[in-house]
Amino acid sequence: MTPRHSDRVQRSFSRSFDSYHGAADQQVWVAEHLVAALRDAEAPGYFARAFEFGCGTGHLTRALMESITFDRLTLNDLMPEARATAEAHGAEFLPGDAEALTWPTPLDLVVSASTIQWLENPERILRKAATQLAPGGWLAVSGFGPDQYRELSRLGSKARAPGLCTPEALAKAVSGALDVVATGEVLRQQLFPTPLDVLRHLRHTGVNARAQGAWSKSRLARFIADYDRAFGTEDGVSLTYHPVWIVAHKPA
Ligand SMILES: C[S@@+](CC[C@H](N)C(=O)[O-])C[C@H]1O[C@@H](n2cnc3c(N)ncnc32)[C@H](O)[C@@H]1O
Image (cartoon, rainbow, N blue to C red; front, side, top):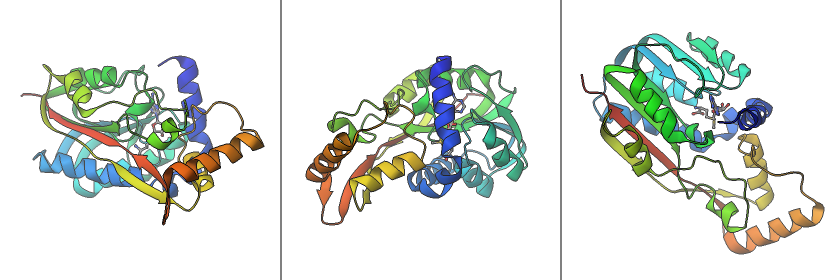
C-alpha cells in the first residue's frame, strides 16, 4: 500500500468512526458469518495468541469474543481511534498499516473482516498471515468481491476499493502454505428509499475513500436520475454487497 493511499483510507474511516458502527449492517452480517465459518470448520474455541487486523469499531472482535476465548488478543487498525475498540475488549492495540507492521508472533489465529479490499494487494497480506501463523494455526479472513457496489460501477463510478478479489484468489494466495478448509461468496442486496440514501450510507460506512472530488449540483441530479432508472424497485433502490471469505489451517 502506498503511503498516500493508506493516509486517505485512514482519514476516510476516521471521519466516519462515529457513524460507522450503527450503519454497517452488512459488515455485522459478514463478521458473524466469518466466525460461524471458523466454528463450522471445527477450529478450537480457545487460542493462546490471536491477531486481528483492521478491527475498526469491533464488529468482528465482538462476534469472536462471543464464542472464542484467548490468552492474548492483539487488535490492529490504521485509525488511532480504534484503540477504544481494544480497550473495550481487554485486548492489546497495535496501530498502523497492517501490511507494513511487524506482527506479534507466534500466532495461533489471524482474523480480519471487511478490510482486505482496502489493500492494493490483498494476496500479499494473506501470505504474510500464512508465514506468521504457528504450525496448527488458523486463518479466517473476509473481504469483498468484484461485484461489490456493482450499481456504482455500472453508472461509471471509478471509486472502487482497490483490492476486490474472488474466493479463488484468496485460496491461491495461501496455497502450499495452508490447507484451505472453506471459501465462500454471496451477493447481498440492500434496499434504500432513494439514491441519496445510498450516498449517505456510503459516507457513514467510510467507503468513500476513493471518491474523486466534490459533486456539482448537475452531476448529483444526473446520478440520482440514472440510479433511479437503472436500480429502482417498488421497495426502493438497490445496492449490492459481495462478501467473500476464506478459512484455512496450517498443518501441525
Ligand atoms: C470496513 S472497516 C471493517 C472494520 C471491522 N473489521 C468490522 O468488521 O466492522 C475496515 C477497517 O480497516 C481499516 N484498514 C484499512 N486499511 C488498513 C490497513 N492497511 N491496515 C490496518 N487497518 C486498515 C480501516 O481503518 C477500517 O477501520
